[in-house]
Image (cartoon, rainbow, N blue to C red):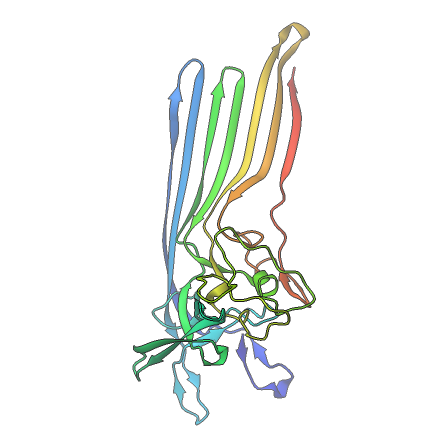
Length: 312
């Protein structure tokens, strides 16, 4: 959305503001690994890779009437503690996050830390320090949202009357912003909601000298540790079993039945991921339900089916 004068009653419109280049490859490989009188085992693998780069931004009008090309900061408008902004700048991917960079926890007092970076006129970093004051932290261009590799693989197995097939999906690389953690992993900022259970690899600061991933928890905490920053960026890597089908065929020719197949089928049976949110495949700005308390998402439904197939 591009802001315009509000004289017409409209303050922003959709408009192309630049040009980008997308490149990628997709590779598929499949075949039978085992095939004989009793056994059949096949495997199909799909691998995708995609990268993008903003190649051009159209000039914008300055206050003095001149035009210049400047990076554009965009937000998704989600979250009660801010928006996970992204930066549009020629030469960078269009899904580059633009956030204050989380620096961890002060081991002396448990306060949250962010980076404060100084740069010269050309934008080159000259100094880097940490600060416990959120307002002093600087915005940085961090990570990509899109996965580096993605795809799936499927396998089918048959042994005499038994058959099985499975379909998996995966993604590697990229970061996802976990909005829910700003509410439920907020170190006690909000007094009207519970806090989430810490993941096994996380730890809470409790006494001086603790090397922890999470600041000290206080009732009605005012240290702003849950403000928008890279603290809530998480890896979106995952491996998901999308579907699994197991069947058994019974010959009943003496009952004038050519075949009776009993089967079990399941969908979304498990997902392996370090993401602490609901679903690494469903970002909060895609399919989100917006409410007064921020965005939420519906996880993929797990389904089970039993059935019979009869052919005469």
